[in-house]
Image 1 (cartoon, helix red, strand yellow):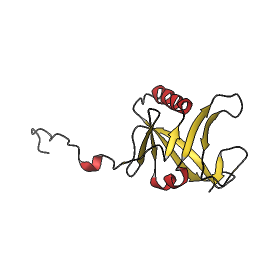
Image 2 (spheres, rainbow, N blue to C red; image 1 turned 120 degrees about the vertical axis):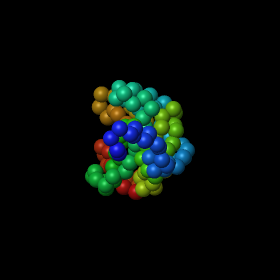
Image 3 (cartoon, rainbow, N blue to C red; image 1 turned 90 degrees about the vertical axis):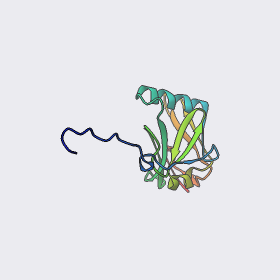
Image 4 (cartoon, rainbow, N blue to C red; image 1 turned 45 degrees about the horizontal axis):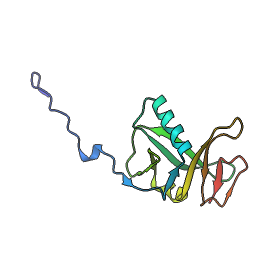
Length: 133
């Protein structure tokens, strides 16, 4: 930039916008209880238009475990599902494992929290935090 000349305005290009596929609740569905908790957490974090990321990672006593995270927006190649008023994103690899799942939230002193009812889980551990497919 030459001194004294105004900087060119920043333009948004297609590469700035993530390439996202739309999915539906056949991939993953939230119960009203889970949706309410996610919306509450998003508002507490100052992300009212944020998304819930659901991913599958290696680990846990059964081999695979769920990872959930609140994020500002979808990432490139994500599958975006709107369920019960919440935007949920799943990466293509994790989608293979969560298809048909339901995410619930249980308020309880013991054993409460988010629960995934996954029809693809062949076995799960007693703590309910991991599974095998």
